[in-house]
Length: 196
Image (cartoon, rainbow, N blue to C red; front, top):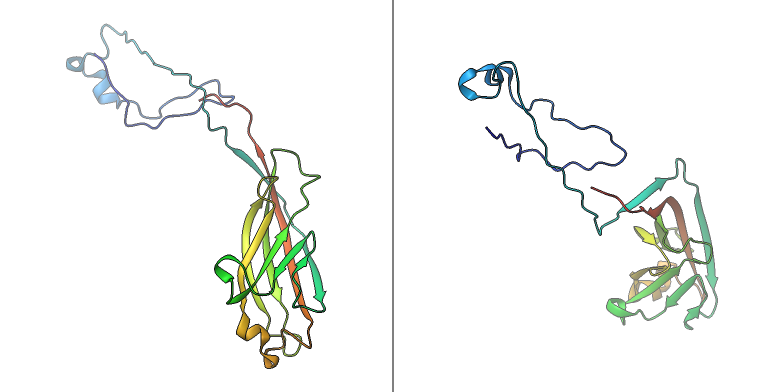
């Protein structure tokens, strides 16, 4: 007689030597002679095991227990010129969906010291600072940075009309202050080959 356990989920065996099902069959059914599981005090169990290499290796996230918050401010004089700093790129008249209606800010990460397949999990806040009343405009995000994705953006940080309005305090004369605040939450490394 064959009993199927297909209702149980697939298990992965990574450094495991044994695996079992806590309640494979209830004892009353097992001992019932009409069911045929136990004959003359003998039973036979079998198992089918499939070994498959997966193409999805997965990632290992190592969290930082108490991540430090770091910040950097940039004061731009003659704001009407686009700034092409290595760490921050500002589009005074917006770009992409912010084009013509907002200022856009892009932050870039220097990935030269990051291992080739690693990613950093970071949370960010980018601010346009109100230099008069401290009613700052900000955008927040949590994202992964890697060699292939080393920039984060806020395409619509502040509406152009509000930003250029002298009473808003964002643009005083022709200078503005932008600030980035960030925390590295963890490091993501690829897993090695896993057999399931």
